[in-house]
Image (cartoon, rainbow, N blue to C red; front, side, top):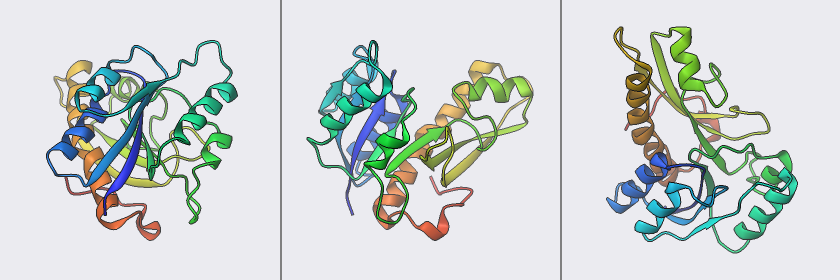
Length: 207
């Protein structure tokens, strides 16, 4: 079953591009109805346009979170979509905003990717935190968003090693490669089988 997505980005959008490429290559049965950014100059907007995807941006500067989210909601009301997909979106979504996208089964139709094996290392510096802690194994988590930061039912996790001679940049690059495979794979699973509420604690997914 094809799924319709609205992707939220704040920067270069490498995960967004991985999703778009997976759709283009007929590996993922989905359509991206909108790529939205809170940064008018986000490189991801240009990339999305190259894929022929509709884009929009609403700067958050000078607005309260409530004012900014109200404008986003007005925008989303103009399109049809099944899921909001956060791909490097650097704003925390409020419970009020999330409440508009609650599935009848109780979860929010908002998906996020995070560069650690949650619940370890939440927050925006997960790669740095894991690296500085000295982990031997790190990983990537795709999860449903809830009212807490980097929290919510886990859809999939995939681990990767930290090698003895890794620099932070090499460590991040290895993790990004996992991100770019895992996110489309999770969305493909959702497209094929939906979200299975009795199977939200899977530790891995075929990529």
